[in-house]
Length: 447
Image (tube, rainbow, N blue to C red; front, side, top):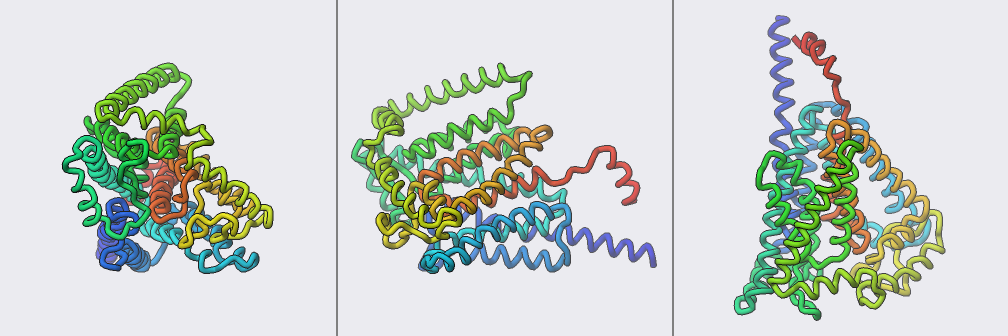
């Protein structure tokens, strides 16, 4: 009887361990749809994205209930992610009531925080040894899907730049695949002559660029994948993404460098930068797009640029809004009556540092920043045994954070889903590791 009971218990445990492998299909479909499905993911009036998210949460919750317990080794990440969500919930439901902010906008602006729910559920259902494997699969899925998106976007740029006679296919393709995208998608020629291809999902290509070295470490053509993603980032014509990419690369190199390898790393980074910039200039020159691209990059520090001028114009209005409640802010959904960018989303601003300060106040910014700093510091400690993973995490995090601070993207659905993926990578890095010396004892106990 004792043998049978142990065998039955072992079989039940094996089933429990295998269970998460099946429930990860819907979250994977959700990620693919978020990357490829367009800015809103609406088809025939139905939000496929939200349906996949709800179904993913339901299946993951069912898996937790079947197990009957939460994975104990992931308790700290679960509490950390939940604490961050609860903290921001104060500025969603409590502060707006205190300050008289319109609750309709307060609930609408940060709705994308719901993507943190599947993160918590996934941490609750996965065994300690499963999380790194799942994170690796997630990285490969994101890179491959992002490369598919990049090939499509760069293809549109090539058609619009070099093949004018067939450029009529571009609007037809966009209308068929991304109908209802509205002003969240821009593909067309700008006044300076550059053919721009950009929509919010492009941020996934920025994440994919940093994840490629760890997702396909043994793949010989991984540099080609990074090259495709890099070209896609340049045809977005977004200065914020360009500068964010540069900052992310510097952060990633700072993580990997040591005193012994400092000189070699610096020379390799400089050589790679020169080669990449030379190839990029060659491609842009051959396409006749070099001059507007250089002018666009040089205008980053110019106050005469209309886009930068708009951000400068927003600053005093947002500061005035902050002065009204400097400690706790006005909550999510707040906006400055003197400057409204959009009647459909009056809370949306491009100057996100000032906007977040006005909404969260000093207290909210400091507390939210403490979570980000804590995640970064704990990841930094893991660089001794997973230097490449930490470099990809911190490099992509820095790049995305800067890029999103220059556009009203940090709180949208795509950005928050990317943030959720980074949190899973972080949890896999900082999970308690079993010392090698303890492995034999554990094996003897298990036998």
